[in-house]
Length: 282
Image 1 (tube, rainbow, N blue to C red):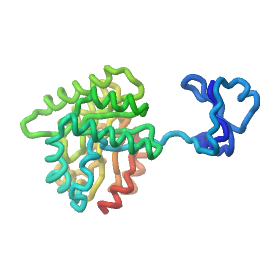
Image 2: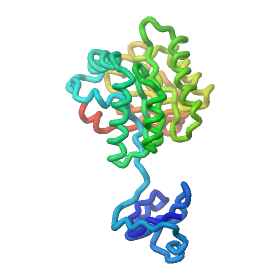
Image 3: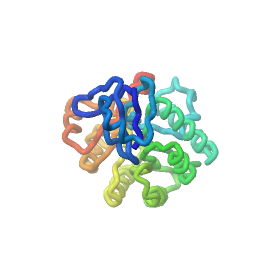
């Protein structure tokens, strides 16, 4: 057993106890004791590490990220979301290579660890991504993640082809059978995916028994697009397709009204709030 001594410990128990100058005992991969110093615990220790007043807390979780986009920082950040994606980001991602994306992901992993993040939920454009190289990078980092290939409705590709291509990547990830490297079905958004692709994506998630990760209600413009296209707001449209009854992460959700928020409270959906990007883009 290994014991960390003279540590300040922030817990996530029911009362969020904080132990000052305490100890934390670890046996194998299990934490066996957290609290004030006890001699009997120290007597059982094979190794005692003096942390000299450092702090220990559970790792933070980044609920929505695009780690392969780390290298795209600063590209027309003054643009609105849809101009930014269509005119700058998606054309840039079309030029991605495995070397570019692997380097970007490794940089993101380093930054997240430096920020205390140990688990992240990633949605990535699969263009130029070698999933084996990404898997090894995450495995080496000792982090945990969902690393999910994004689905888009693309010119020159049928819905069936998009589903088949994405399913092959998902099954490769599932084949690792690593509880620290998982995958969701990740249709990009209601505005960038057709109705058929959204329906088929949900069907695949149900069949494979994995969650969904999707951008929803991110901007007023998105709400206008979906209202014009389908006669419904984004949430109502996704509810019609059955998304609210399947375990899902909806990224952003800043353009939800009170009634929609109340509806989500009774659904299978969790919102990943991204306050910094929302503040930047107003």
